[in-house]
Length: 239
Image 1 (tube, rainbow, N blue to C red):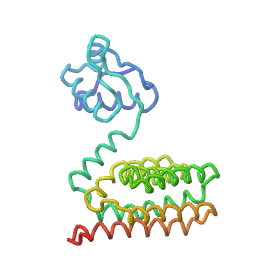
Image 2: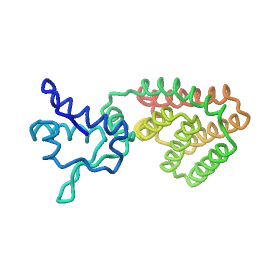
Image 3: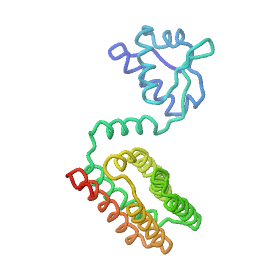
């Protein structure tokens, strides 16, 4: 399966050959790579170079290295976990400001909702209403933590409704990491949660008639309005 690595760039070539084999389907998820000794001979490289290449592949989320007698390098399903973790670290480090995130969301989610509204099926509307009812139940219990989690679920489902895996991926990444901004800048209360819930209801109503423009306008206003509230908090207004 593998050939002697190019000696001018051994490390990079080892990574690329194994990566290509995984992406092309030659190595299916769950497949165990040959033992380290065999891989070293296939690539004609040192054990240190091979181990470093395997560590890089593990960091990329392409393989999982298990220890022990029955261990080894196991091919993983390609998923968004490494990207999500990188985005989470970027957000937590302060590398993404409130304004950065709001600007991105206004542009992205405005378009996503527009597309989702044109493609919404009866099943989609039913699922959105189910999420809405779940959120409403948390609102009535004054359970702000679970309300926000349900709100994130609604935003993520909008990505699902686009039927576009790239949009789904990006939307999930953003809303898996947005919670901390509310915790820090805009803790939920009865008034804010009701405002959020009302916007949610308006979006569903627009989607029922496939009114893409209206649904898009609602969510753009929603993101901008809540970002403005957070900005007020950062500027010293604690109301």
